[in-house]
Amino acid sequence: MIGRRKTATRYANRTVAGRALADALVRETVVEKPVVLALPRGGAPVAAEVAVRLNAPLGVILVRKIGVPGRSELAMGALAMVGEEISEFRNDEIINGLRISSQAFDAARHRERLELERRASIFPSADLDIADATVILVDDGLATGSTMLAAVAAVRTHAPAMVVVAVPVGARQAVQVLRSVADFVLCLSTPEPFIAVGGAYEDFRQLSDEEVLTILEKRTS
Image (cartoon, rainbow, N blue to C red; front, side, top):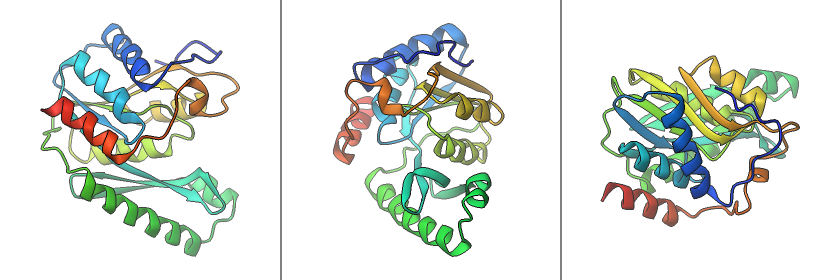
């Protein structure tokens, strides 16, 4: 499903967005054996609300965007980690269009891999069995979709029964691309023109690692 609304939906914060997303998931699809995986940091409070509503276990999938040199917000790829396995996604359209050298890409990938490994030491991998499960990947929004594409690819290696992507807001093009790789995509709002994920939130402050850990601990305790 792609959100039908072209005007931006505004959420007070990620928690409110998570509740709206959880309600929509219940209405739009039947989820059997759900496992909810958040893309930290911003996806954690959204995913926590989904996990509560579905009475599902909650974990994280660690993803790092590989940004274009000098334009870090533009993804030329991404890395994702499930357990100890790392998957890579390359956005060849961006790489070739901007004539990114292999040396520049490798350097950026190396930096992000180090950060991915740092985060792995902070967010211990939850002992979640996602084989034959309905894995619901949740973030606070989709811009280019590169990080979510990497997350889908990483999850697929663990043989889930179904991969669902669920976000409160996203760029229409990113949602369309993800529909080609996920089994089901739920995006509540696809504003046009799409400016940024943060435009859908009144409170879009960056979360700390400690805040994400607290969210995860509350759900798993």
